[in-house]
Image (cartoon, rainbow, N blue to C red; front, side, top):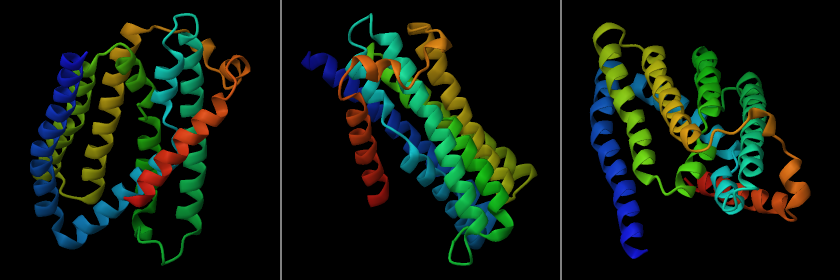
Length: 233
């Protein structure tokens, strides 16, 4: 048990170290291409998208791990988690559109880039990967999770290099970041569905709670803890 825990920790730390090294490259390219002002606007947009996705999301991987231990409840746990992720997309997109449309000059996202900001936010919401993360952790596949996480930095670096050479603009770099998020989500889901190919008709926000008392209390609690973590950052 201790050996497995250390191995899993090693995979997690290795992925973070790999991403940290590559981030120096794609951030340097973005800074050099956009300049200080442009890079600042770029960071504000990405921070807005990431914040909205983080505040709106539930920690659905915890629900998968908690109720997926038994085979008979695993499809319902995954279906419940996917339902919550879809709820996150709707709620987050609505909130982001409202803030960007009604936000005045107090909102640090530049007006001329708010269309790009809502597009990036939608991508970040659609690329949520908490549920497949839960599936991989349930099956102790931390190595696959590390490989999926590394996809983000690899795609960002490649996209940043192309943007730097051919289109050194904020929208081009935003497109690179969006491609990284979508590619990572695709890899996560590919690994997860190979382990647990569940029917999409099992997606439901009521089936699991009707059998597991306290299910909604659990997800609201974990969601709130995630919101507080994002807010503190």
